Each structure stands twice: as C-alpha cells, then as structure tokens.
Amino acid sequence: MTVKNWTGMLIGTVALLILAISFGCVKQRPAALQTAEPAQAQETAATGVAEGGSVYNVQVVPLTTQECAQCHMDQFTRIKEEGGRHVSVSCTDCHEVYHAYNPLKNNYAEIMPKCAACHENPHGEDAAVQKCADCHADPHRPVAAIPDPSNMEPQCRVCHAQVAQTLTRHPSAHTEENCSSCHSEIHGRIPECSECHGNHSPMVTMNTPQCIACHPVHEPLQIAYSGEIENNLICAGCHEAPYEDLKTHQTKHSELACAECHPVHKELMACQDCHGDAPHNPAIHQKYPKCNACHGIAHDLRM
Ligand code: HEC
Ligand code: HEC
Ligand code: HEC
Ligand code: HEC
Ligand code: HEC
Ligand code: HEC
Ligand code: HEC
Ligand code: HEC
Ligand code: HEC
Ligand code: HEC
Ligand code: HEC
Ligand code: HEC
Image 1 (cartoon, rainbow, N blue to C red):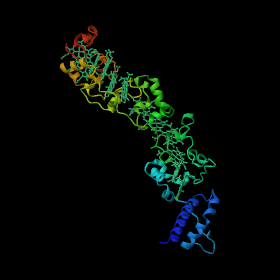
Image 2: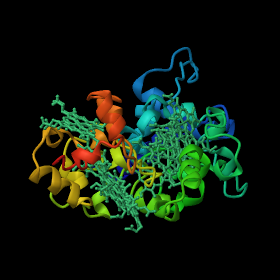
Image 3: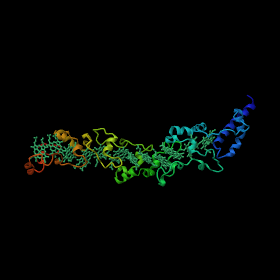
C-alpha cells in the first residue's frame, strides 16, 4: 500500500467519524455540517448515492440507539443490563440534545437530560428528595446505582412516613436504631432477626416470620399472637413452671395450646369463660363460688 493510499484512508476514516457525529446534531449545530461537507461528497461519491448533482439529495434519518451504542457501548450496556424500567427509553428520548458540549460555554449541565422532562415529583414536594442525582447516581441504571442506605438515612422518613410514625408511636429499642442498621447494604433489604438476636426459647427453632408474628418489627413490644402459636415450647422458654405442671399432671388441659387459654399475652382467663357459669349443680357453686376450692389451678387440676 502506498503512502498516498494511507493518507486517503486516514482522511476517509476521520471524515466518517465527523460525519457520524454531525448527523446527531443536525438540528443544533448546522456549522458542523459545513465541516463535514467534503467528507459527505467523498462518501456519497464512493457509494454512488448522490444523484442529480446534489450530494444533499439524501434522506437523513436520526441515529438509532443501536448506532449510538457503536460508540457508547458503556452507557448502552449499563442500561441494557441494569437500566430497570429505563430499558423502555431510547438514548434520544432522553438526549434530545447531544454532542453539543462546548467547554467555552460551560454548558454541560444545561445540555444533559432533565428528569423532570418525564417525571413529575415522584417522591412529593419535600426538599430532601429533590436532588435526583443524590440517590439515582447514574441515570443509565437509576435503581441499581442507588447508594448505600446509610447515605439516605435522613431521607428514609420522608418516603416511609408510615413506618417512621409506627416506630415513634411505640418506643422500643428499635426506635433507637438507625433504619439503615437493619435495612443495610442495599435499599429495601429485609434483615433476618438472627443477624442481631438469638432465640429466647432455645428448645425450639424459630425463624423470622415466627418472630414477626409475635413482634411486629417496628413496634416489637406490641406483642401480639393468636391461637396459631401451637408450640408450647415457645412459651416454655420463659414460663417453665406452667409447662412442666401441665406435662406432669396430665388432664385434658394438657392437650391445649398455651395460646388457646392465653390468647392475649399477660392476660388470664376465668374458668367460666370456657366452662360456663355453672358446670355443676348450682347449689355446689353457691357454697363454693371459686372453682379452685376443689380444682386447684388450670395447669394442675388435682383436687
Ligand atoms: C433516562 C434518560 C437517559 C437515557 C435513556 C440515556 N441517557 Fe445518557 N445521560 C442521561 C443523563 C441525565 C446524563 C447526565 C449524567 C450526569 O450529569 O452525570 C447522561 C449522560 C450521558 C453521557 C455522558 C457521559 C456519562 O456517562 O455521564 C453519555 C455519553 C450518554 N449519556 C450516552 C447515552 C447513550 C448512548 C444512551 C443510550 C444507549 C443514553 N445515554 C441513554 C440520561 C439518559
Ligand atoms: C461515531 C461515534 C459516536 C456516535 C455514533 C455517537 N457518539 Fe456521542 N460521543 C462521541 C464522542 C467521541 C464523544 C465525546 C467523548 C465522550 O464524551 O465520550 C461523545 C459524547 C457524547 C455525549 C456527551 C457530550 C455531549 O456533547 O453531549 C453524549 C450525551 C452523547 N455523546 C450521546 C450520544 C447519543 C445519544 C448518540 C446517538 C444518538 C451518540 N452520542 C452517538 C461519539 C459518538
Ligand atoms: C424521556 C423520559 C425520561 C427521562 C428524561 C427520565 N426518565 Fe426515568 N423513567 C422513564 C420511563 C418511561 C420509566 C418507566 C415508567 C414505568 O414503567 O412506569 C422510568 C422509570 C424510572 C425509574 C424506575 C426504574 C425502575 O426500574 O423501577 C427511576 C428510578 C427513574 N425513572 C429515574 C429517573 C431519573 C433519576 C431521571 C433523571 C436523571 C429520569 N428517570 C429521567 C422515562 C424517563
Ligand atoms: C433520597 C434519595 C432519593 C432522591 C433524592 C430521589 N429518589 Fe427516586 N427513588 C429513590 C428510591 C430509594 C426509590 C425506590 C427504588 C426501588 O424501587 O427500590 C426511588 C424510586 C424512584 C422512581 C420509581 C418510583 C416508582 O413508584 O416505582 C422514580 C420514577 C424516581 N425515583 C425518580 C426520581 C426523581 C425524578 C427524583 C428527583 C426529583 C428522585 N427520584 C429523587 C430514592 C431517591
Ligand atoms: C425517595 C424515596 C425513598 C427513600 C429516600 C427511601 N425509600 Fe425505601 N422505598 C421507596 C420506594 C418507592 C419503594 C418501593 C415501593 C414500596 O414498596 O413502597 C421502597 C421500598 C422500601 C422497602 C421495602 C422493600 C420490600 O421488600 O417491601 C424498604 C424496607 C425500604 N424501602 C427501606 C428504606 C430505608 C431504610 C430507607 C433509608 C435508608 C429508604 N427506604 C429510603 C422509596 C424510598
Ligand atoms: C430492627 C430492625 C429494623 C429497623 C430498625 C427498621 N426496620 Fe424496617 N423492617 C424490618 C423488617 C424485619 C421488616 C420486614 C417486616 C415484615 O415482613 O413484616 C421491615 C420492613 C420495612 C418496610 C416494608 C414493609 C412495611 O412495613 O412497609 C419498610 C418500608 C421499612 N421497613 C422501612 C423502615 C424505615 C424507614 C425504618 C426507620 C425509620 C425502619 N424500617 C427501621 C426491620 C427493621
Ligand atoms: C440490626 C440489628 C437488629 C435486628 C436485625 C433486629 N433487632 Fe431487635 N433489637 C436490636 C437491638 C440493638 C435491641 C436492643 C438490645 C437488645 O435487647 O438486644 C433490640 C431489641 C429488641 C426487642 C426488645 C425491645 C425493647 O425495647 O426492649 C425485641 C422484642 C426485638 N429486638 C425483636 C426483634 C425481632 C423480632 C427482629 C426481627 C424481625 C429483630 N429484633 C431484628 C437490634 C436488632
Ligand atoms: C409467642 C410469641 C413470641 C415469639 C414467637 C417470639 N417472641 Fe420474643 N418475646 C415474646 C414475649 C412475650 C417477650 C417478653 C415481653 C416482655 O418482657 O414483656 C419477648 C421478648 C423478646 C425480646 C426482649 C429481650 C428478652 O429476651 O426478653 C427479644 C429481643 C425478642 N423477644 C426477640 C425475639 C426473636 C428474635 C424471636 C424469633 C426468634 C422471638 N422473639 C419470637 C414473645 C415472642
Ligand atoms: C421472652 C419471654 C416470654 C415469652 C416467650 C412468653 N412470655 Fe409470657 N410473660 C413474660 C413476662 C416477662 C411476663 C410478665 C411477668 C410478670 O409480670 O411477672 C409474662 C407474663 C405472662 C402471663 C401473665 C402472668 C401473670 O402472672 O399474670 C401469661 C398468662 C403469659 N405470660 C403467657 C404466655 C404465653 C401463653 C406465652 C406463649 C404464647 C408466653 N407468655 C411467652 C415473658 C414471656
Ligand atoms: C380456654 C378455655 C378453658 C379455660 C379458661 C379453662 N378450661 Fe377447663 N377445659 C377446657 C377444655 C377444652 C377441656 C376439655 C373438655 C373436653 O374434652 O370435654 C377442659 C377440661 C376441664 C376439666 C376436665 C379435665 C379432665 O382431664 O377431664 C376440668 C376439671 C376443668 N377443665 C376445669 C377447669 C378449671 C377449674 C378452670 C379454671 C381454673 C378451667 N378449666 C379453665 C377449656 C378451658
Ligand atoms: C365442690 C367442689 C367443686 C367445685 C367448687 C367445682 N367443681 Fe368441678 N368438679 C368437681 C368434681 C368432684 C368433679 C368430678 C371430677 C372427676 O370426675 O374426676 C368435677 C368435674 C368438673 C369438670 C369435668 C366435667 C366432666 O364432665 O368431665 C369440669 C369442666 C369442672 N368440674 C369445672 C368446674 C368449674 C368451671 C368450676 C367453677 C365454676 C368448678 N368445676 C367447681 C368438683 C368441683
Ligand atoms: C386450659 C387453659 C390453660 C392452659 C392450657 C394454660 N393456661 Fe396458663 N393459666 C390459665 C388460667 C385460668 C390461669 C389463671 C390461674 C388459675 O386460675 O388457674 C393461668 C395462669 C397462668 C400464668 C400466671 C400464673 C402462673 O402460674 O405463673 C402463666 C404465666 C401461665 N398461665 C402461662 C401458661 C403457659 C406458658 C401455658 C402453656 C405451657 C399455659 N399457661 C397453659 C389457663 C391456662
């Protein structure tokens, strides 16, 4: 290959590049088109597109996302793989203006797409959530690039006011914790109780859903359970005596779950709640108004 050919090819390649770039900004920078003119002539002459003497007698179509990607593989890959719902948005849907950056004009921020063009106040009016880029650090992967939750600690409460309110209304040790000490690592992660707690009833293995059934996590002292707690060992971890009594002194009560007789924690039921006011001859009850005059206690009915 001769040096002449090399120079020709070099000019051709540079021209092609300028041409491709200039297509993208036909509307914004007509001046760039002028620079591209000789290249256009050469290109069209070579491919024989020009007709009727005008090299402009061609249909110019905007660059597609695929064509942008030929030079901007990085942005393309980020959207493709981690763009979330932005995969439905093409490059030029957002970049209506591009290749218009001019350091002399210091216009970078001005020409970059604005979230507000498509999103109107997605998180409400609060000032703490107006700087989109604070959290959506990369528009090409808007959710995947959300920073470590500890950076958002002050804003959790703005977006999750309901949860914040629950924690405040029911003070517990969890109210003192940062949201992000539990919801750590990535936004929305749900922790296991076992990351911080052991099991208070070592005879049973309990998992997080079971813990939550008794301890709603944002108000863990509002202990609530239903008759569905069938495993008496869970209660026995803290109440050994009733458990042992019922086991040692077998009666029909031994077949019942603790939670059936104590459906609300710390509350006691009366014998009459289940057996009615007068299971025996009314005269007996008149004489001995208390059942435990003959029956002992519910956990040990020995007479
Ligand atoms: C949802 C809107 C949106 C889409 C879709 C989008 N971009 Fe962007 N892009 C932006 C915003 C906003 C910026 C400015 C980021 C900043 O200021 O840091 C940007 C910046 C850029 C930059 C500058 C360098 C950088 O990464 O910050 C390039 C290059 C770019 N985009 C190319 C593309 C290409 C190519 C596509 C299609 C494959 C595309 N963008 C799709 C919104 C978008
Ligand atoms: C022939 C290669 C090429 C093609 C095709 C191309 N670009 Fe670029 N683009 C560049 C180069 C080179 C730069 C400057 C260096 C950089 O920022 O990466 C640039 C810069 C940018 C920038 C940041 C600076 C500015 O002035 O806007 C954006 C945004 C951008 N391109 C978007 C696009 C979009 C959108 C498309 C498709 C419609 C596209 N580009 C097609 C090569 C290309
Ligand atoms: C050209 C329009 C357009 C622009 C500009 C735009 N978006 Fe979007 N965005 C969309 C569309 C469309 C969706 C999908 C909406 C849907 O499915 O309901 C979306 C979805 C999102 C989502 C949810 C993504 C997911 O996977 O759940 C986030 C976050 C987001 N946009 C942030 C931004 C941010 C931040 C900016 C500014 C940097 C921005 N968007 C700019 C069109 C746009
Ligand atoms: C303090 C952090 C923060 C700021 C600031 C912020 N966002 Fe978000 N945004 C989030 C988080 C966190 C999500 C939830 C992401 C998820 O689905 O896991 C989200 C979700 C979204 C969604 C999807 C909403 C949905 O209902 O699916 C859109 C759209 C969005 N943001 C756009 C924006 C725009 C536009 C701005 C600027 C006005 C902005 N965000 C500012 C943190 C932020
Ligand atoms: C800008 C608003 C915004 C901010 C700030 C924000 N979130 Fe979210 N969060 C959302 C949205 C939107 C969702 C998804 C929709 C939903 O489930 O409500 C979400 C979902 C969640 C979920 C539920 C995930 C699931 O599986 O149900 C948790 C947990 C969560 N966020 C915790 C946090 C914590 C902790 C912080 C602070 C470190 C925080 N969020 C900051 C908007 C936000
Ligand atoms: C002690 C750990 C812990 C702390 C502290 C904590 N959370 Fe949670 N959070 C959890 C667990 C566990 C779940 C799952 C609960 C479930 O499945 O019932 C959850 C669920 C959530 C959810 C989704 C379900 C819902 O109730 O809406 C959101 C949103 C949330 N937390 C936000 C927060 C915010 C905001 C804070 C701080 C104000 C916070 N959390 C503090 C452990 C915690
Ligand atoms: C990130 C660590 C962390 C996680 C995860 C966590 N906790 Fe806690 N929790 C604490 C700390 C710290 C305390 C206070 C010290 C203690 O009692 O161990 C506490 C206290 C409690 C208390 C006593 C509250 C009080 O005010 O005395 C209960 C009940 C509780 N946690 C239940 C749970 C349950 C149920 C889960 C799972 C849904 C859970 N915790 C997950 C850190 C955590
Ligand atoms: C059957 C309901 C029940 C289940 C299931 C349950 N707890 Fe408890 N938990 C309680 C009761 C009742 C207390 C005592 C409350 C009091 O002192 O008033 C308690 C107290 C606690 C305390 C306070 C410190 C202590 O040990 O006294 C922590 C922490 C705790 N539970 C964590 C858990 C964890 C973690 C799980 C799951 C492995 C769990 N709990 C499962 C009922 C339950
Ligand atoms: C983590 C320990 C713990 C667990 C688990 C636990 N409790 Fe308790 N329970 C307590 C504490 C602490 C008290 C208050 C004791 C006091 O006031 O003397 C209590 C009180 C009670 C009382 C009222 C006692 C009285 O003297 O009035 C009953 C009834 C009770 N619990 C039943 C249960 C049942 C049923 C279960 C299982 C579903 C259970 N508890 C699980 C710790 C626990
Ligand atoms: C939550 C309901 C409930 C409460 C409260 C209750 N019992 Fe029972 N009791 C039962 C059931 C159910 C049986 C079994 C009935 C059957 O199988 O016919 C039973 C059986 C008995 C029996 C027969 C035992 C046997 O092994 O044959 C006696 C005696 C008895 N209860 C006395 C009492 C006394 C006394 C009290 C109060 C200290 C009491 N019960 C509280 C539900 C209850
Ligand atoms: C004067 C003593 C006495 C008093 C007071 C008493 N009972 Fe009894 N109860 C008995 C005797 C004796 C039996 C028969 C025991 C047996 O057959 O093993 C019995 C049996 C029962 C049975 C089992 C009935 C069956 O058919 O198997 C129940 C339930 C019962 N009592 C409930 C009560 C309740 C509730 C009270 C209080 C309202 C009460 N009793 C008060 C002496 C008493
Ligand atoms: C048949 C209903 C019944 C069953 C089953 C039952 N209890 Fe009770 N429990 C009572 C009644 C009624 C009392 C009130 C004392 C009395 O009058 O006998 C009581 C009292 C208590 C007390 C407070 C007094 C004490 O003895 O410490 C605790 C704690 C308790 N129960 C825990 C439990 C646990 C834990 C279980 C399961 C292992 C259980 N109970 C099973 C009916 C029952």
